[in-house]
Length: 314
Image 1 (tube, one colour):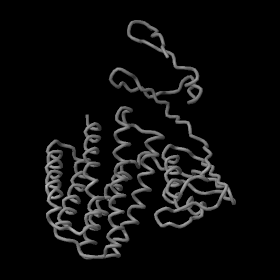
Image 2 (tube, one colour):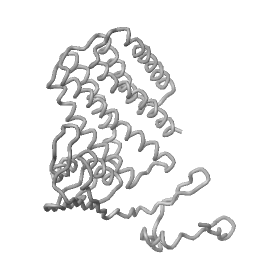
Image 3 (cartoon, helix red, strand yellow):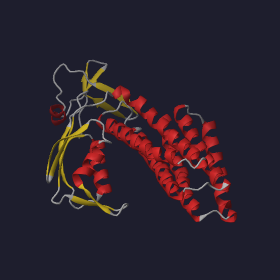
Image 4 (cartoon, helix red, strand yellow):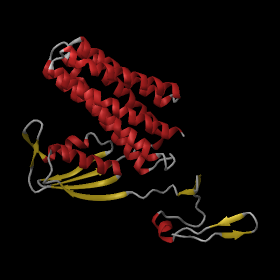
């Protein structure tokens, strides 16, 4: 919409606020608004963010994992009340090839969504409500915790494989649970309110989302090893060490930005590619190659994350 500029005296220029917008955000005479200049446009913030009150979904056609992802992204979007209905009590769990109770699936996912609680449940209906919010000032601490958990997962993967420590490998699943929970909270906070420039917000959202995929790759790698239960070949272990180093270096780079760190990340990625290219000549067991494939995929994800971090810097 176009608004004419009103000239007041010689130095003051005014434009009117859209009426519908002012009503939606409860803007009244005398209120203070935050006005931020960003290139050729202004960002006006009220401090009054309207809640996304309710959403209702039917999950009868979804499997266990799909229910997780639908509920998770409604939470990330910022909804405070989620009504879930279903016309049958059971949903398939494709990985385990067994049925699961939908209500149990909902309880499992709600545990990964900080602040949400199931406040009512019936045979074919479940009401989920947000009962608490985390202070926005905690965002940086929560995000750093995500990075610490991610590097811990990577270290545990290496140590567990080196020592064939199956107990340690099982704890990786628990750490992934915590990573998922904190990432969900970070993304919800970004969607509800962020002091970050609007042009940079998509880059941070994308970067945090990608951390979850790397965490998932580590989790799946640990699951594969729990089935393998053998000491790894030296070549496989060396490659996992290089990937672990890359993950830890990105963590350092995120909080201490400089171009030398980008160069080191690029150099290490090329070293890993050389090792990967030599694997066919090393007669690596097939199950180890499958395991490695999950971790090697993390390299391209981190290239994308480096790009997002650069965008956040400038």
